Image 1 (tube, rainbow, N blue to C red):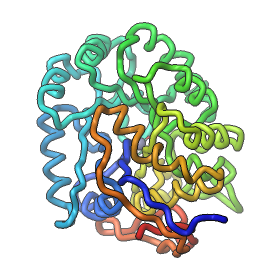
Image 2 (cartoon, rainbow, N blue to C red):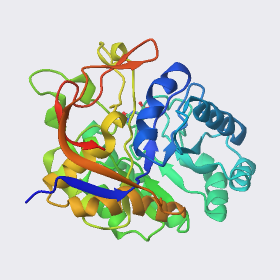
Image 3 (tube, rainbow, N blue to C red):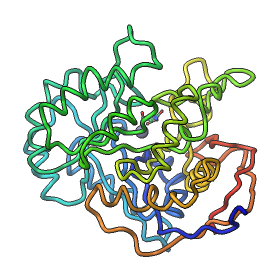
Length: 345
Ligand code: NCD
Ligand code: ZN
């Protein structure tokens, strides 16, 4: 018999885009309702590259939060070729910055200021290894000669394997993994190498981008992959292995920035994140594994306490709105106009 209630320790989101300004005000309550903490991505315009900027951004997030929440934003720095080892030392000393995000220049939304050649940031990586500050990786090559569906696999072979050899003690998270190759790499790595997995990569394969026509709201980076890879991700997430933890990569864009000739990458899932993960785990017959993936593994990886309070999910199908307010426009959430099986009580 399938359960009608599920109680778990309050989860955390280890990869989240909150944006800034009015957009931040539109989305942050969705995350704060479900999660105790979130690792907040720094790919703003301009990017968050210093501890001072991260602390300012953190204050702007706190100022937008509903009064009754204990939600804590955990800040990150955006790695550029101008980042200094001193900034890493400041990050470690300050306590509000929990990781540094690596974007290959040009790989995704607001990544232009990212790294062109990893060799140009070796002194920074060395400082991070020394200070125990995790490197969060957007793991895709940008080489236009590489097929878009193979860019994660190529990144592992070309960059991640050599990086692991060069900095064996560097704490790393391969973010929003999408392939069997990534699952295998992380599974075989030591405990200080982890991976986040999104709800949409657990629930959808690449057919969803083309179902009956082109579906811009199913376009994200790394792009959805074929079914064999989705199944590998489901196995990784539901298998109890502490290398793998929840990271929504919820990435809201205005409707008109998605429904256009050259649409932005990013899927908004924060409106129903834990419910979507519950569906994916239930489909796999592994609801009992949701708590460890959503509430324990990430906290353990980051060396933070597990959350003490709990949330309850009820089997109570509900219909997702067709659109959500987003700054002065709207954002189309995942499952817009369709039902989700679980609801946060
Ligand atoms: C993210 C965004 O919109 O900021 N987009 C996405 O498709 N995931 C950037 C990212 O995480 O790659
Ligand atoms: Zn992201």
